[in-house]
Length: 66
Image (cartoon, rainbow, N blue to C red; front, side, top):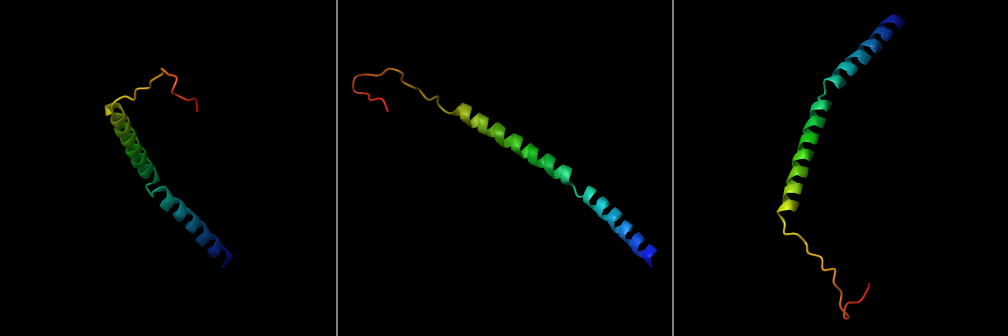
């Protein structure tokens, strides 16, 4: 009986390892990284398309330091 329990336990461990390995975690991670790369590229393109912000370094007497 003990040998049957040990065999069942070993089979369960082996099957769970195979099932988890074939779960597609690597594919999911690759898709997630590809989507992230696309969103970063779109964000950079959007930032470059905006008008540049002009900073006026000149101060006059009416301008107060914060």
